[in-house]
Length: 351
Image (cartoon, rainbow, N blue to C red):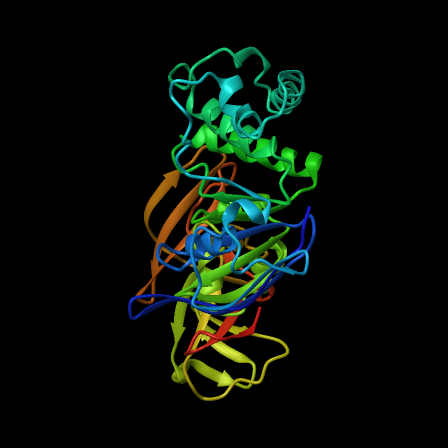
């Protein structure tokens, strides 16, 4: 296990700076998830940590040792890629044990270690099979097994579940989470899927345009987003954002909003434009809510345990996530405690 520290990391591709002065401290044994939109720099940053990508400025420390100029093998890390990259002519046993075999480990020790890894990943009955005889989830477990057997200082996962169907992704998320709890190895995981980030991470690192926007626990990022970007990136469906004109500011803490005079405590509003955020799951159909309005419902998606209503009101389009046990009629409610307030530049004022 290892701590990993990034100091002032910058990376250019020609004249395009893709990583911009990144500082990050990853503690020994943490499960860190890099998340962000395509092109934000998350995979590039992971490859810089692994040594597969050179950096232009900055320092990479592993257990306080400067490894900036070291090749990947000398960093003691194991990486699992989006593509399984298994040797097609080798069976599962040989794929898992390949790195030990090439380093000269004798056959008895090799057999023992491959057996231990196969047991952890429930691959014991598949050791004789070739990759073409495996399902996608089984192939990914073999790829993880190949990484585990080296007993690395840290695991690096680069969107490892992207090639799997929805059910397998859920299954493999659980496997990876259990694996981390069992082994306790420092893990950095890259994904564009914020559901994966929320369910796996001790801490999430949200990136955009080569910069770290916010770092925090899933709870922290969901409930206390730093700005509009994080607020809309974390949560499914994404947070509703409604523009409020300065004309709708009634007093230092009151806004005319969704057919209601809404009081927002602990703020001091000015006569200027604001952005109001409400997560779809914070709407309800209770008349006992602080505030209610009559929506025009364009569409309802029934997802089994819940349904999502797409609503138009005051030229705004919003979505509301409601339990399937509740009937959506002509009333939608919300409460002041669930309101997120941002200035017109997207900086959070209150949540």
